[in-house]
Image (tube, rainbow, N blue to C red; front, side):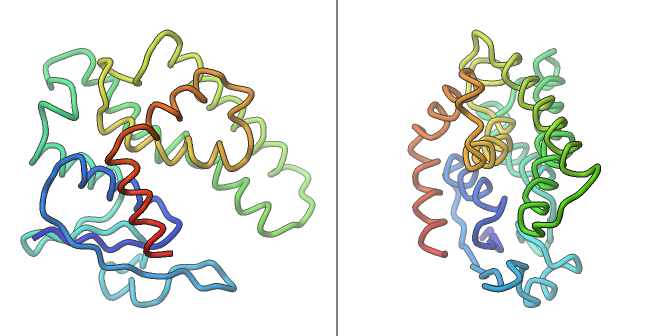
Length: 205
C-alpha cells in the first residue's frame, strides 16, 4: 500500500493527482498547517527529518521531494503512459520540465509568496522576484506555443509537476498576461483526475 503524507495547501496535491492518474491503491495521511505561522506541523518530522510534504511511503521506503516521487511512481507504474520513451529526444525535454518545476520555476514564485507574507519593503528581493517571474512565465508561454502539453502532445509527469506553477500564477492574477499558459491551465484543470485531486485537497483543508 502506498501512503502519501499530505499537507494542506501544498505541492502535495499534484502527487494526489498523479496517484489518481496511475490508478493505484493508496491512502492519504493528512496534516494541517499552523493557522498563524502557516508552517507544517511538527508531526511531519516523525516521517522525514525535513518535516515537509509530500512524503511517500511504499514497501518500507520513505521518499521525499516531489520530482523524485514523480519519477519513482511513473517509472514503476506508468512509464509508457505518463512519460516519453527513455530513448527519445522528448525524454530529455520531459526531464528538464520535470525538474524546472521545482528549481528555476519555483524559486521566484516562492520568493514572492514570502515577500507578500512578510510585508516589508525590500530594495532588491521584490524587484528580483518580479523580474524572474516574468522571465520564467515568458519561457513557459513561448514553450507552449502551438502545443497542448509540454512534451509529446500528451499528459506527462512534467505537466503534473508544472501544475503547481500554473496554480500559483493564477493566484497572483498573472494568467491574463500569458494566453498560452491560461489555455494550458484550462487543459490541466479539465482532467478528471485533477478534479478528483482538487476535491480531495479541499476535503483535507
